[in-house]
Image (cartoon, rainbow, N blue to C red; front, side):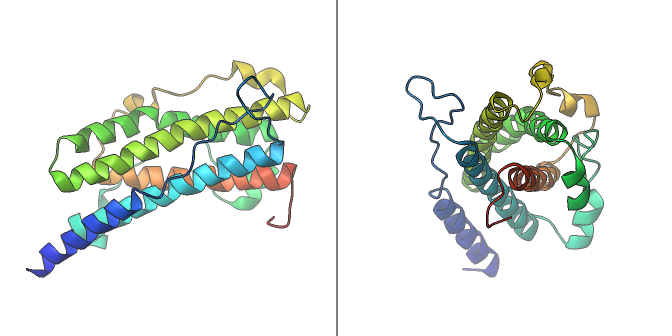
Length: 223
């Protein structure tokens, strides 16, 4: 067996094992509706941060593996990435800047980023579904990322409801509109590698912003 074949076999084994380690999807409740456990704001934050960590971990693993096995070199990789379709969403790149934003602003940015990936992730999954067995495994992981992103958005909305109920955030965010069409509006065709690069970047932002928001509102020893 050649070195390349060994590398592919090892990568397939890695993907198979990683598919088994998923975050449990327990319903998130802000008000304690029928059939749903009432959770504190701290518990809600813990759940969404857990989901965001899993989502970012998956995106990082996939991006790393695709770079390592399918792209010719790092210099090429840096050159092919264009501006991500979410670049029009103004996001703080420095922790200190994010910490200065109001609760509403930071929550709005998180929801905008999550909603902007709904269509691109489904497109990425479709583009890999009809490929060879190896890419089918990657496709399964992309599908898992899509599922986690959807659950994460719902979870952040529950956090928002809880904060509104506790008077920590304005009710004006109920009229907030999500940028679902950012991907098509960007007008740029993006490869699978570019999409994963951008999603990894944005999932890292979502995770960091959620941690900042939690530490500001319900600080604990981890802050």
